[in-house]
Length: 229
Image (cartoon, rainbow, N blue to C red; front, side, top):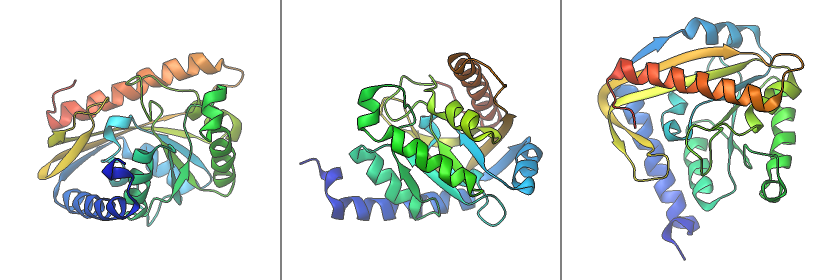
């Protein structure tokens, strides 16, 4: 059995990761760009769908103020690695909805994508926020699955694209070269709001939003000086 699949090891590592992230977030010097866009969404209330690329998942809790934004839920895959991530982000105030963000084929439905979509819509209807990585859990990198725009279309709620960056950082050897923050560095959070166009083709919206999400991430990297991969 892989060590990460052991519940006791998962719990210990998740606690350690959560504490490390909390320490890093407190010591990083953050630059916020276009946050007024997000502030307007938070102020108006109601549901909101949030997306960032999978490689920046360890930075994501830094962008969501729990004291004034919609109550968040993180859409996280049913994989063993997803369970570990779910435990860690829950300790930072982001309970998980388990399932895949891609929900268009039979294999994905078996992983819980359809149920996750229903649970996500229910949370949005109650006025909450849903955060997800539309290229997760295994890529391809920066290619958007249709779960994210589907949630925006079905709910009618605004969507926020978030570019996240920090430097220095540890770049892991995972499929997406995920970042793990280091303390006392520079960080950046860049926002863009998008709304699902009435009658638009889902695949075309996914392609457009993928390009926009990559652009705000690149802008965040330019602020911190992080080399893009």
